[in-house]
Length: 395
Image 1 (cartoon, rainbow, N blue to C red):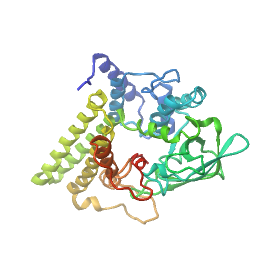
Image 2: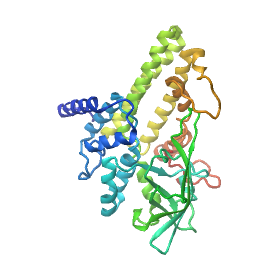
Image 3: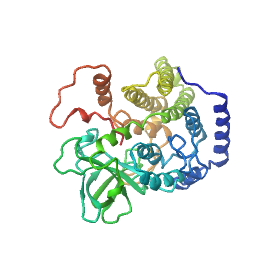
Image 4: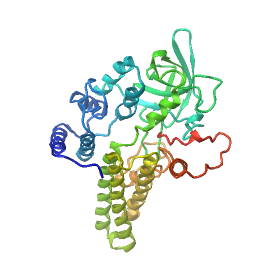
């Protein structure tokens, strides 16, 4: 593996660990926390360009920061969509004016973003989007349509929206990526989607003549497919290793429960726990090999998604198995319409059911590997299932 931590990385690790220990507070409101991170320059450390209020770090230092953040118990990030998706896309495809306008507020934690990709009739089939953006006479676009599974739309200040700017176009032609302000009462409506976990981090977003400025089209009109594919390539990378720190913490909790309940005495349960530990190590080696450059390729993100999606889903099943009947008990009183809280194991089980679907389903990831890596014959395509439908986008 062409990847390892040098002495300067460990010095950086100590700095990051000390800063997190001094600043992480239980119950910190997420938007407030974003500004704390931004003030210290911790947002955007992986951007290829500096000078926007962020510090720049090496690849290994980015891994160190991600790992220490996961270990620290810091609040979940609400600014990651702007930092990890929008910003690298603007650095690669944006105009100087777009970078100057949008990158500093992201780095400061002042503006939060959401992603307007998936639609009710275009989930993993990204080229099938129907949302339209028509030019108006005042130098703006008018956007009409619906997006779904939009993470944190209820908190976001802006949304990058993939829309059809050529009404006569089909599939991946005639698409554009527009930067749209969310504060447009009467033109944008956000409806939270209540999940099985009782939370509502995802939303439906309805656009009814929403405005976007012409100079806020990224990459130029009609370049939306190219820009969108580039953006999707930024999704998986350093953050995968931080994700694995969280996975390790969840696995350790399940192991403790198995010992406490006596479930670990069952040889089948013991074998499954050991398998989870071994597979987690495989995931880490794959991530390091990919980051180091020796294992990167067209199928590397798909392999990573297949590994962690199934692994996390199996861990959720183990979590409730070792708990026994107590895992099925809910809070009292309970009603379908009332808010409710789940314990960690229950949340893990319910939320992980979707891990093999969102971010590109397992079937899509296997098709990508089969066709683009192994060179196998393309699978038969029905109506509306072109090759470009295999993008595997996240929600």
